[in-house]
Every structure is written in structure tokens, then in C-alpha cells.
Image (cartoon, rainbow, N blue to C red; front, side, top):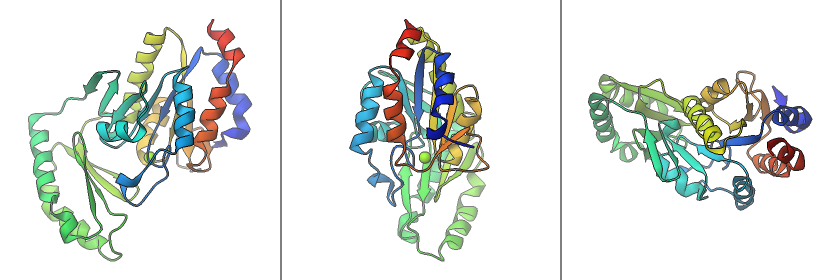
Length: 266
Ligand SMILES: [Mg+2]
């Protein structure tokens, strides 16, 4: 894995073969530092400024594990594309697209949601997050020593209703989602194709993410530039930046891509 900023010349060379950049960003842990309560995450003002500036020149999208509405509200920049629930639903302009799930899967998800509704009362510190399709159980604030009891509750009450459902584990969060083979990577490919067609330019995708759920995008965008927040030997990303204070600098660099790029696209 290579450090992004020290390899900037090499990255620029990759860009020079294209006519623009499609910037694809995860939200939590990437654009916004991880916080104990998911509702408390904010997009820092300076990052927002750079992103707004970027969006006046090239397409950009935020692809989050959050629900679509939630991530759209958290970022709050018009003109960006947004994807929620790890890419299961996405919005470009006024148009929302989503993957299809069977009636039985939807029924099972509803059942699981009902079963888990009382979880925060039984396990103080647990936070539930309702999404477009499923439900996330955040346990970052669960009292130490309670994890085993929570796990056994889930095994007993939830696992028998898992047909058509899969579990996705993230940083101190377990999520129940429709068991489709769709992911952030497939969503990223759809957006890439869409924006190349729309802008009539060949775009280099640049994806930044920090978590296991971003690996599908790192794998799908091998021909682009993939960046992980935090170095990890197990990641498929080609580059890394040290922490979530860095995306601002990265987007600022993209905003400085100037005349050369413009010459290319004209
Ligand atoms: Mg993340």
C-alpha cells in the first residue's frame, strides 16, 4: 500500500490519460470522523467547502452504509449523487434507484426489526439505526462484559429468521441487510458508467473509504484510484491516507488539478 500524497505525481499521470475525475466517497470514518453516536457525525465545514468546489467541475457521489435520506442530510450538498445502505439504493438528481428484494426477504426484515426494537432497553448503550432496507445495531457504547449476552440474544431470537438476510459487520456495528450480491462496488460501477455517459468524458474514478464494506469498491475500481483511510495490509486499496483528517487535503489537491486537465478535456 502506498501513501497517497507522496505518490501524487504518479496519480496525476493516471489522471492525465482521462478527461476528468469521478470522486466517490464513503461518509463515516472518511468524510466524517467516527463518533460514539452515529447521529452525532458531522461533515466538517472545510471538507464541505472543498467538496462543493469539486462538484462545480466534476461529478462526485457519497456512498454510505447509512440510509439514503440520512446521508443526504448529513452531507447536504446539492449536485452530488448519493447512495445509501451500502449502495443498495442511490439517487442521481431527483431519480432514486434501488435493488429489488423479494417479498419474503422484506417480511423477514420487518420481523427482525420488530424483534430488535426493545434491544436498547435490555442492553443500555445499544443504538438502533433504521435504514432503507434493514437495521443496524451499534454497540460501541454497550457496557463492557455485555457483548456475550447480546450475541446470544441475537443467535436465539434472530438467526432463525435469517432466510434471505445477511449480516454485515462493521466498526462496532452489526447490520441486517437483504442477502443480495449487490454492494458498494457494484453501485460505484453504475455511477461511473452513468457519469461518463452524462458528461461525455472518460472519467478516472477515485474512491476513498475506511471500512470492510469499502473493499468491494476497492476491488471493482482496480482501474481507478483507490484510497483507504488508515493503512491496512489486508485491504485491496492501492493507496492510503493516514486518517480522516486527510480527505480535505486530498480533495483540495484535486481542486488544484488545473490547466493540464482542462487541456485534456478540450
Ligand atoms: Mg466508513
